[in-house]
Length: 231
Image 1 (cartoon, rainbow, N blue to C red):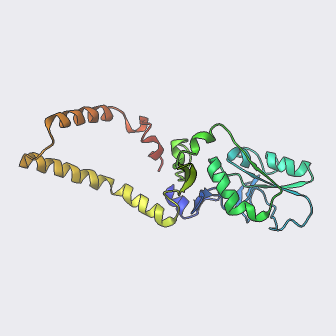
Image 2 (cartoon, rainbow, N blue to C red):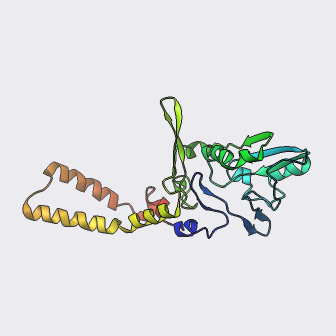
Image 3 (spheres, rainbow, N blue to C red):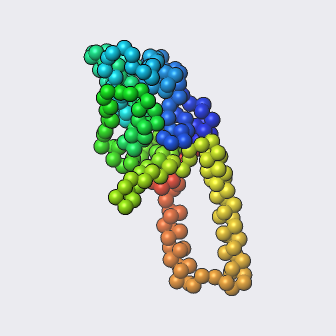
């Protein structure tokens, strides 16, 4: 799935260097489209608002995007059709408020909106302290995100750990190297026993106790391994 994300094979998710992930363009389903600007719907928007109506931009997660609604049924589209306004839907599934804010800075501000709305739900609270989507939802995509840190009273942006195709390839290569890492450690332990160069017994006993408890848990039942189960 990370390969599919990195190679832009999905309309609904592709790696973004600042936002972590974003949506592509084109048809998602018979009732769901993304325009050429990556916004919900088929309508294209001029950068300059020349039609005289109020321009509203909405940012947030799937509750803003309208995952279970057709283009015309999402609540931003309802505002667009019911008011004398045009509503640009920048929602993206799984986003935190940090990504919503960054998308406004990256993409939204150039459209010069009169009103900006950032949708917020309680589930977004944990997303702002996470950098991997599957820690919140193991069934979602293998998406990495940026986050802000509070540093000496100021916010400092910590970029997404996977923000390009090169990052994705390097991360997959590290995963593929894990078996060799453990094989090397086993070889080192055996050599240590042979040369009588080992850790103190009290350390080894505690490590063995921890290892026995870990192997009792099936990988598919481990909350720590679950996010990687569908990698």
